[in-house]
Amino acid sequence: MRAVFIFAGVALIERFAWIMYIFGAFLIYTGLKMLFEKENADYNPNQNVLIRGFKKIFPVTDDMSKHQFFIRKGKILYATPFFIALLVIEASDLIFAVDSIPAVLSVSKDPFIVYTSNIFAILGLRSLYFALSGIMDYFHYLKYALSGILTFIGFKMCLNEFSIDFGYSYHISNFVSLAVIISFLTASILLSIAIKKKEVLK
Image (tube, rainbow, N blue to C red; front, side, top):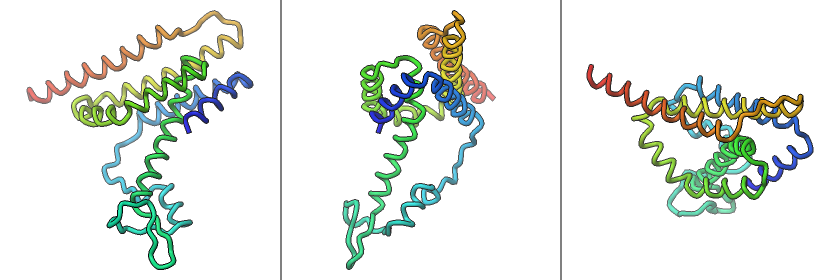
């Protein structure tokens, strides 16, 4: 799925340069949405649009006695919760690809570099998830840093493309982008530690 997104994205950019504005605007939207999004502790997976849609077209059973994606009861084939879990995982990966591909295309438009960097990211994604889930309680402001990074990258894409289109010399380099990203992450971590210490002292 990521390969399709990458090659389609590169092809679109080469054919329609203005598509960078759409990618940039999407990243800005994603960053702002993350900033104002409230955590939902009462999230119910069964209310997921994908799961509800699948249940309307295919029968699903709660039977997990067999470790299979599908089981047959009488003459009817049912999907098991294992297949539902797989469906959600793949859909989540697709959602990650939607905003990660435009972000990496802001750094390089070489399909080989973009694709291999995504492969390395996927290889470490699960380990990184468990590491982040373990430290999120300690670094409460990390979410805001990620929101700021997405918004900045989207702004950078739009600004750089605007400069190219109208002949301006102003350009946000990858070095400056890296410095901004590190600054966001460092500030969020230090702020989280400082606030945590203040709460402990109280």
